[in-house]
Length: 299
Ligand SMILES: O=C(O)CCC(=O)C(=O)O
Ligand SMILES: [Fe+2]
Image (cartoon, rainbow, N blue to C red; front, side, top):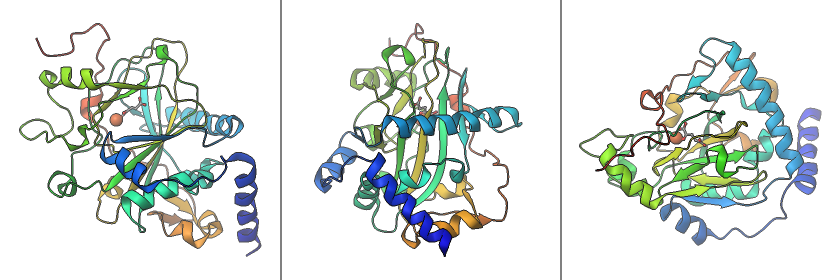
């Protein structure tokens, strides 16, 4: 009980210290952005000091993952994805209780949304372009039902510059039916369409973005000498099945310390001690990178 009260106090302190002033988040703008472009952002949601702490926690977890066989998944040359135990991030509760994150989840996924994945991408120096892709095949709910039932949130840990291989999206392509081809990797003949649509996202420390992971996107070639670690949070509507591919674990002590309202939104195993995460969703199509000079498809 004491623990619970202390935790609440921590959250409240962080509210006043580290968060943007509460704003009325416009439901129609959120729906319009995610159903339209498939990508929205909240600029300056966290302080730079808070993001620096996130970056430090991620750096520790990245070193641990690289040292453990199977701990970090290759996503192309010098590009990794690592799924994590949320409680290893000091700011995890700040992220999932951030009023903009809560508003976006509620408006798009409904009141029973569930957090199913926490991890980070690290595109390092020398990482190549990724092939244009979506992170998983479009479910029936989206293809036939024309409804988004999952979201991916990203928080950059560094100020992204042009030479760091920014993230790019092709707005509106969350609705594309890739029938007849690979369900995640559009054929190269289609790439010129995505290149023409492409928007580069030069996120700054403190920004949070939300996207449909179905919106066709790619990490671009990192030509700088700095890596660009970015936190990833996956959230499902009750009918989505993405939790099946992940194994979110919280220790009993941490779980019990969370307010009931927060617990309600996490699909996880409650464990005595954290098991090493068995990364199960290698995406074969991402293992090869595309050199920036390489012809981008089409004729
Ligand atoms: O580079 C990024 O920010 C995202 C990478 C990505 O889309 C992926 O690995 O699936
Ligand atoms: Fe991706």
